[in-house]
Image 1 (cartoon, rainbow, N blue to C red):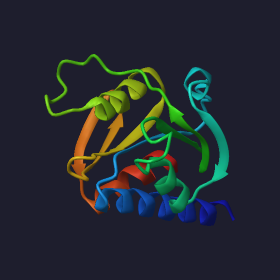
Image 2: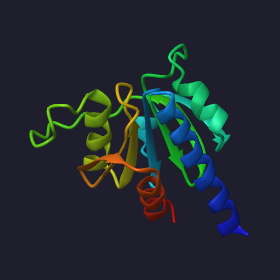
Image 3: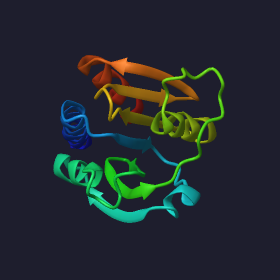
Length: 151
């Protein structure tokens, strides 16, 4: 049953993000439905793995060689890690927006994708879509945004 698979994936992704948030582990995750984003995939390491909180946590662990890049998730699968994203030049972004936040916005300016950032400084979770940044989301808001972009 596909909706059951989606619920499980949603639960794992949200759980992984909240865990990274609690640990103040910086993270950048890109969600895409159908587009392949070849040029972004090419900058990372291919994984082709099922969604897992542990894998997300391992990738963004500060000792991991992949922790600085983005993870690409497509239809519930961890496609690649360590990906380099285009950085937004948008002057409207708050001064506090670091490189991860600018990359999250940048990828959504160029592709039909959503991006999630966990701040290393604060542990706050932000969401980017359509070139806009939605900062400091609460747990329920994180779930709502994920639902909006996964389903």
